[in-house]
Image 1 (cartoon, rainbow, N blue to C red):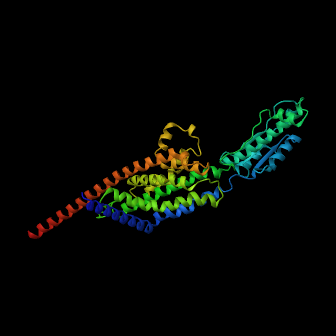
Image 2 (image 1 turned 30 degrees about the horizontal axis):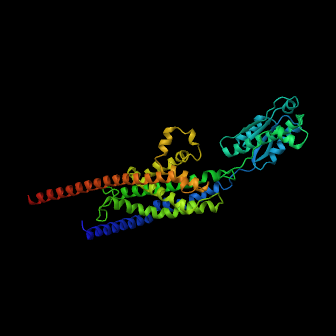
Image 3 (image 1 turned 135 degrees about the vertical axis):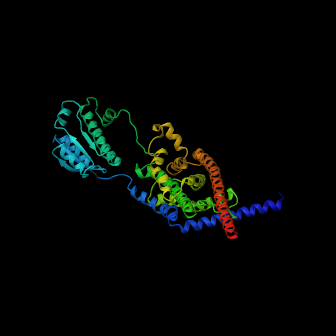
Length: 421
């Protein structure tokens, strides 16, 4: 092929890709369902999640108190428990059954139980117990009640150790007696200790993936419902070449989600004052292969979507499992090997880990090099899978079209024979 022919082919390919891109844009705007999933949901859904987790930690968790001891030590314990910012002594009950009834009614989320011999055991030098009952359906309230009770018990234990010590003559001696091995607890990265800062980076990236998969799948289902024979690939001179079709359609989704990803990863955390240490260049280096991998993965997956409703069954129920498989809410060391293998298939696994590194930990490109390389590998792999799927769709479309044409010609020939006879 000479130079002029090569330039003509390149020019024709670019024109075809632009035509397919513009047609996909028009289809997206005209289809209300696709428009909702690709634009409205990414705009509103992160705001809803961020607003829910904006308080970071729970405050004044109502707790029922069952004090059968009625002693100075139990009252001191209750006062310190009520004075903490996370817990509140809301009800005083005469029995454990009465307090359990309040939990069943969701009036309180936990119980502090002091037995009648609570202080007597302390004075006799025996071990005494404070029972803590919590509603395990809400992990944050469980953490607040249990953590506060444990801190107060440690503080009272320290005072008992000091009172019984025979070698402590100064404050420094008392410190060494009660805390021979000193340590400082300094939280890193998630300095607030809040649930929002811990979970939000993973949720934001997962929202990008799930809404993009829903939009692509819904568009494919709509195309099949509107044109049963041509299904996904229309018969047109512009749809002449697999690469042109795949690149043209992917350009539409990439253009939309470049804007959406910038909004979700840069603007939403700042709207609600979450911790974000992300820099533009590491973010761009991560999000470009992530979006391409998700787009090609969604286009390949769209071959399974026969009707618009199918995409909801394929994508929505996977949101919670995918969040767990990223390792952000469940440690990878406790995850079975086969689940780790399944997690490697999805771009969100590597996107969440990479974004957590650069957003919450201030990582650089070198720190997320592995995630970037894997996402590029997935983008290339899913691109060729998409090309193979679309090749099958084109052959399937042409086969149906030829069969339909042959049937029409056969019927026309039969009708002409009848007329001649």
